[in-house]
Length: 145
Image (cartoon, rainbow, N blue to C red; front, side, top):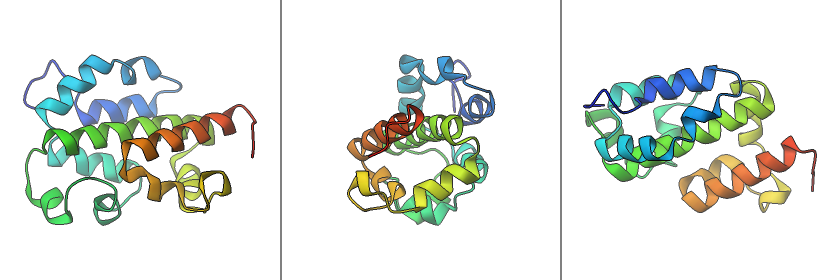
């Protein structure tokens, strides 16, 4: 990020590592400001490594091509916003499933409550992200379809 007053993607990684630390993630105004500033390629690659996802896999759900993700130094607002949305999903997923690897396994399995598709495939839209977060919430509360 250009301005140190905004949370960087690396600070989101620190939030994800902290147990049940939603307060920073839900500082919506700071996230909006950071998305407007743009996530850096370095922070995105650190995030991808932290969540054990390849840049190629993330290019399928982020509104930027693989080429853009690997070449651009700072991403545009739309791309940055999706990265922050994914960080939020992974924060919640890690909390509910106990680990990133376990959450990734769930994301890769077809889900009947989500229409028989993989949850990961729904992460390419904000509405899909909402559906996935709702399903994680139901799992967290023991409400299984």
